[in-house]
Image (cartoon, rainbow, N blue to C red; front, top):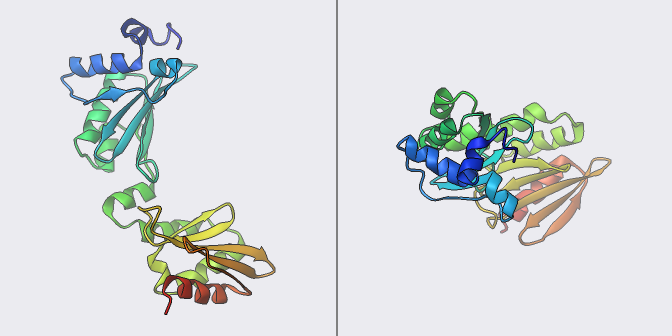
Length: 222
């Protein structure tokens, strides 16, 4: 932590103490503020506090005065942004903790950014948005054909889709890691391996259409 960039943090003994002081000066109650790190240096340069929608992390910029804010959830970040003013940090955190929407947050603090999926998560309809984003982003022909085949099935398109490391997946409930789902792995030459989890059932098929049939069977066994 450079004292020339953060004289206020040096004065109060680190980010946690300085943020708590600025919040009090602004008449803001941020609740319990702790460090986001277990290291001695991290206690000086990071802060973390809790909201009803997940933890909020603050880190310092190294080359210039900057407070980076990341509003997290169990699944993905809600929003993120940076400012050089610690009082603005306190006001941003207070607004989020008071329950403002993402749009309201950005209206008040334009440096805070969020994406379309975060807004869909907030509105309660992330599945439809995620399907749309995947179709917009996926250019690999074998995965695009697979997406089309899966989406054509009325049951499968109600599940939350994702693509990770070339693997296509469907989750029964994207808010729960234990809810289970389906993974479909391209094997080349139009073949796929369909995997169910947590049951570990698997089968190899020769077309996207066959992958859909097996996925349905794994999800809804007779």
